[in-house]
Length: 295
Image (tube, rainbow, N blue to C red; front, side, top):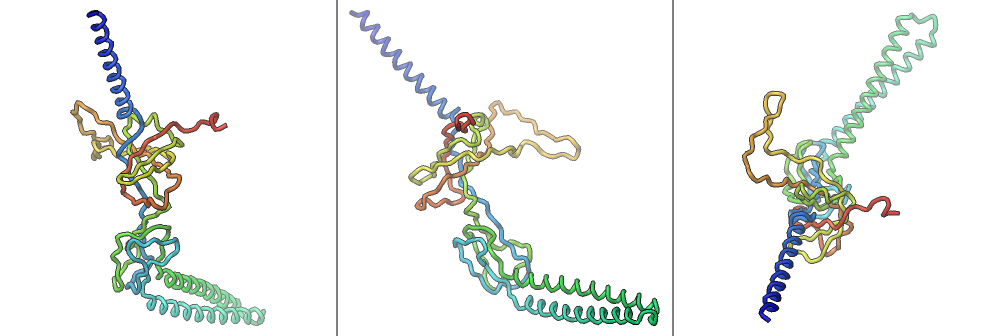
């Protein structure tokens, strides 16, 4: 009887030990090998909108956090100077056109004179007409540039998105090429998960992914779009020579590098707006479908 009790206790102990080992193994696989990470972020491209002309801001049409469509006017540079420049260019064009017409008539008159006209007079008339034609083409280009500058006083959004961190006010002076408005491109919203490098062999483009946003109920579905092909090596510093100077490392424990994996979302519910910079947990559900499986 005592032997049976002892065997029973040993069996129960072995069962508990086996269960603990199995649980430990499952936890190890889940945390160390399964392709998932809490280090995920919602990302979007930010477009810095800069005017193509310089001047005072006369009107600001956009407001902070306003959704905009591609082509919407964000702000306007004062148009008066550019309207005057266009009038001046059009007047110069008319003058060049008149000079060209006069030079053409003179060249035609010299041709009608035939042998009565000297060769020198004919050559001069041809040269004058060519110069007038070049001046006319230059005036046309100047008129087109002035017209383009006037059109560019309306600074428009180049993408669909949301205006963010807007501080521009009427009366501010803006310079050509200097960004004044930032627009978050909502068409580029995606999730980037930063996976440890030892988990990358289990991740393939086309694999299904599940995304949980921090503090939000619900799950977003997506697909692995791509895996980054390079990350910054912070232990490497450039030297004055041709060879790279590698800083010695004496750490006994080497932490795995984290590599960005881009997740393309299939669809986002209207009641779950995405904000660039949100924290997310990303889980890769399986391998990418193969050609045979697709058939």
